[in-house]
Image 1 (tube, one colour):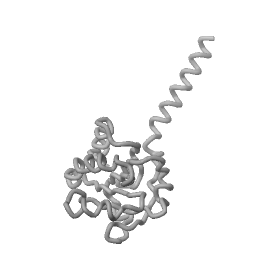
Image 2 (cartoon, helix red, strand yellow):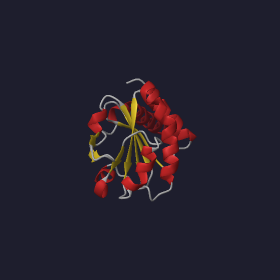
Image 3 (cartoon, helix red, strand yellow):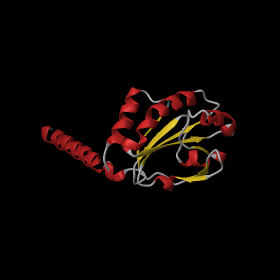
Image 4 (spheres, one colour):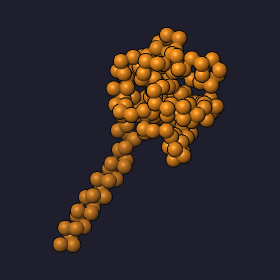
Amino acid sequence: MRSCIKIILFTLMFCFLCLAFSFEKNLKKAHSFVMPDISGNRVSLDDFKGKKVVLVFWAFWCDTWKDCRRVLAQLYPLQEEFQFNIVAVSIDSRFKEEVKPFIKKGEIKYPVLLDRGSSVSEIYKVKKVPTFYVISENQEILYSFTGVPKRANLKQIMKLLEAKP
């Protein structure tokens, strides 16, 4: 009986270790996209190749976008130092009317894209907003979560952004 338990425990430990060591190799590839920004310019995920990306899906009908804007304002000054870009994606049709005043005032300095028809948010399996993704230089998804970032989420984001490729 004891040897059977030992075999089961050894097997479980082995499986756990294999899973732990293969995690980095099995990162999901971020789906490429092309969407218009507020000016109608086409922006692609490939435009940011070689840099990490904090990609956030939000909607202006959901008040949490204001909280996300504050969080992204804290991250924005760190972009150059940690070699990453912030990209926001609006999944609603009120995009231009809502965001233009904030861009004009300089409160939003990163690209805000319009996901017409929610095709990109469907590919990224966005069920609730806001949804955040941290994407590597190689366009692999390093981290994702839904909701306004809490301290633990921000720490995880910063840890990933600070990591060297």
